[in-house]
Amino acid sequence: MSEGSTVVVRGNATKRGWAIVTGASSGMGVEFSKQLARRGYDLVLVARRLDRLDALATELKETMRVEAVAISCDLGVPGAAAKLVAELDARKIAPSALVNNAGFGAQGVAIDLPVERMTEMIQLNVASLTELSLIVGKGMASRGGGSIVNVASTAAFQPSPYFAVYAATKAYVLSFSLALNHDLAPRGVHVMALCPGATRTEFFDNGGVKIEMGNFFFMTPEETVRIGMAALQAERPLVVAGWLNKIMSFLSRISPLWIATRTAAFVMKPKARPMLPR
Image 1 (cartoon, helix red, strand yellow):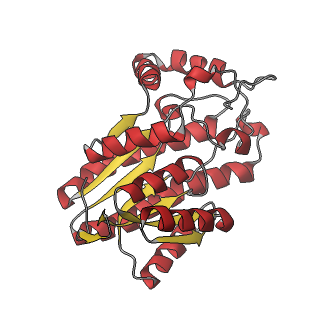
Image 2: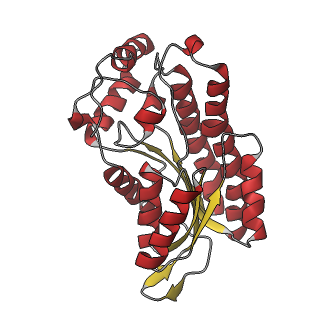
Image 3: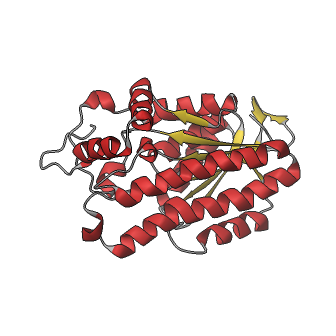
């Protein structure tokens, strides 16, 4: 893993600098924060729900002996990413790692969903992710190194009816991350796209997602993030979490688009009696 800041020793942890984690109030964001802290990073925890961030920051400080800063920020609002970076500059925090984990989806026929909600999704999943990657990535490059993880999805590999906008945003994240990694690698900055499949998080409740899927399809946030961190350590540009997701994403990539689209429609069509993770 490329690092942009000097490694020093404090307590029993080897310090690697500051890591920003967006969407840090739940699910994979919490797990990314914990696993980064175990590796010696101080944390900037970013999300809307400050009470959850404060609780996580306290836990990380007490149990892992790292610094943790909680910043309430709605990255679904235009201009929020720039304000977040300005706040970090004011605190003299120069991050050596960034995890763009914040995002959401919404299920249904695209024209039946609120346009405002779709615009907010694009702002969060695409625009703010891009802005943070570019601004923070530029700073990392100027300091000689760093790491960026952009959380995409297995939905990135095919058009997904009933998730049309969400899948399109994740296809962007995948394409953007791979290209940005190529651009920044000569400057010591590694960018990786992490593509989880179904994961036991609040994604389903927040997006009103109802799909029939056996529990064996679902991974835990701990499993997904552990795979992502191992791939980041190996400086891989892309990782699909889980062997079943690897198979499904591979089949999507080699299938004709009309077959991949119809298959996604069958899986993603809202079901009256969903099987959701416990």
